[in-house]
Length: 124
View 1: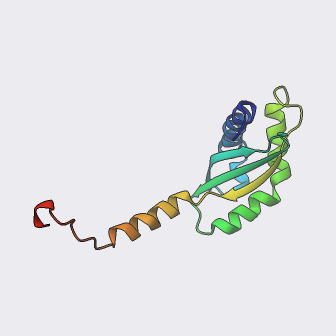
View 2: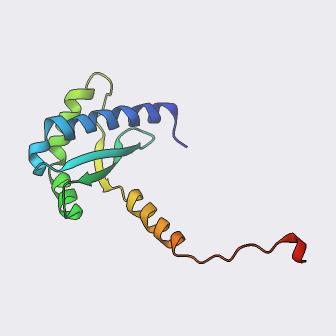
View 3: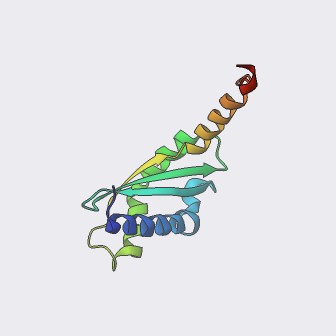
């Protein structure tokens, strides 16, 4: 369970990182549209797990590796934005958010099931 402070910092980091990916450094990633779906912060606010979703790219793993390689640049941009709100700029760990693909997979599985109708109560 996250504290209120963790939740506030997570929301702020999500807004700021979204702005960075969409306005400040889109040229670094060949025009791929990167969405920050969620951010989870450690209790001491020193580590942030950033979950990303990608559009406009065929190979998500290669793009994630590029983002990880340019993590220092992204963290520097983040520091410029949050320097008055946070004492320490958190270390950023990037991950692919695959919840959309997982939901699609589950929908396909459920739609493929053949469930017979429940027997009527009168038949007993």
